Image 1 (cartoon, rainbow, N blue to C red):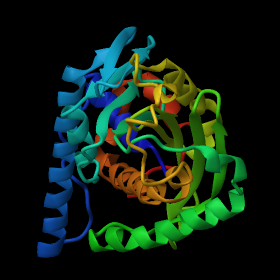
Image 2: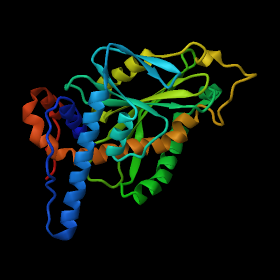
Image 3: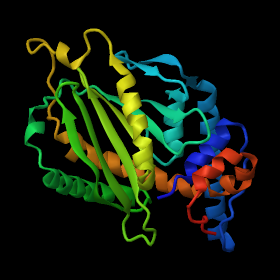
Image 4: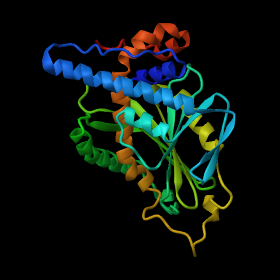
Length: 310
């Protein structure tokens, strides 16, 4: 699964992309409708990224997150808040999520990743289950949940996906109350053998938890997951909101334990990422071809990649 869509975003951030007509083949009303639909999606995506860039905060800066924490945004990172972040996600084919807080992009055009930050006010998530985890059982549950979520994706006109395996098995640190896991995915029955991956990190708190999910290609994960570690370390809960501030006499407890963050609610989220990555890779194609020569630094994004299909 290619990240050509991310290159398009960076072109927009730098003011280099221009609206372009779709080059969908075919003739007749059906082909015309397809061209019109793709053009609208491209324009929507471009507009969303332009608005996002105007609202962005570049590091070094402290960014408040959902009245729960602060993100000490390092240099070379860029944070896009709501509602602009939501517009970008919708333009990428995703439904609006009330838990979305913001998006983090690289501040330069030499990277091929971005991260989504959400806050889920679930209540205090008990973590005792983590000591008894079995990676094989968790993977089976994740696959089952993804298959169920495919019904919704197909109904919305998007392709079904499948979970291939762990890119990084679930690991929980009971001292810092941080969870990490990553699974590879691809379109079901697709001739494209490239894999997508979303690298999931969680920071548990007193009233709920943050998710910082990094999107990149599977072959880029070893070099890019350092950004997840950087952002996770940069997230600091406000005084009284940390996991260790929990008061069993007064605080709400989540209806699920930490296992659900991997094998339960995560299955639907995994499909969401695969959906918009596949859609954006297609809709960005024309803009990339038009703008790539204007930014030599972006060529590194395409080193070793297959030529976009006609």
